[in-house]
Length: 276
Image (cartoon, rainbow, N blue to C red; front, side, top):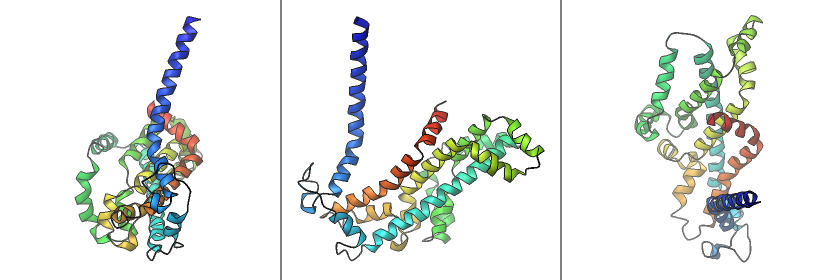
């Protein structure tokens, strides 16, 4: 009886601490959402508004009389046009490289693996200036925003580790049946790596979706700015009415939440593989 009571108290204590930490971590998002529906004169002044309004969202889509509302819509479109191709290309490059290093035996494969691990120790900020100088001819273009960001060393490393767990017989059987390497990669390797592909795609998408420094550097033109950059540049001018800033921030998080809910099963499997 004493053991059950002790176990129950311990479980309740752990649950209480976990819920407290969860509430603390989610509170900024709650605050952002609530303030986005709050009347402008009450924003940042009340925790629970007396009423809710869509004025901040209407401002962004042009129904609230904003003369520059189309730039918010354009920025949202730019974010999608940049994030999705970057994530897709990163997955393809990671998949092909991971398969090549693990399943195609050639001299120097160990050197490639060590080089990938070595590059992962470099902070991104160190390579920012050289990357900009190389990509400078592509400034204010989608190519300049996508191409330099579509090679992810982490994605390649993830695929390499996953392919190491797959039996060689799976791919050798396909070769015996006459399948070429590209067919093996996209018809056999790709389907069996759903969990890793999901976590790589979502991680790269989230990283690219929230990228700020590179987009500010390579695409200063207002027509090419992503939503994340526009929020950062408009914060001071809109300081008197921060409601639309909160609304834009909510919109910025929605694609990530939707993607996670749609692919949560594979995301959890990918996380389990990473922790092994």
